[in-house]
Length: 93
Image (cartoon, rainbow, N blue to C red; front, side, top):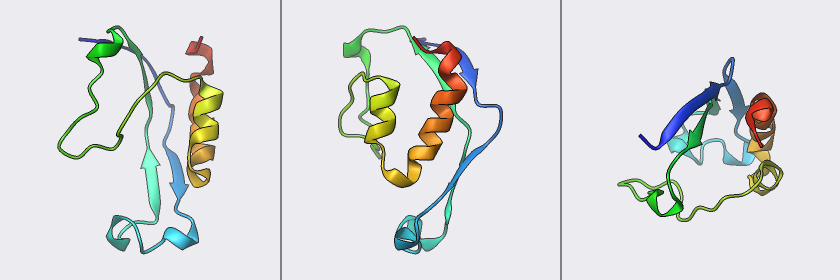
């Protein structure tokens, strides 16, 4: 109830793990990921953001612009984030 759907990527966005990570992450079962991305507008207040879970992916959060987000991501995933920003650009402030 704190988000409104805005858009989704048209197709799947994929990436491969770099050679130095193959066999070391995800139990060696996977070579990369295929992802579908969704854009939602957050309607809540900052103090309503909850990232704690049984298996947290993040330890902290903050609002940043898309350029800073792309620059801060690990290099092998950067192209994915560039594609996502490009796909959602018409909807971003």
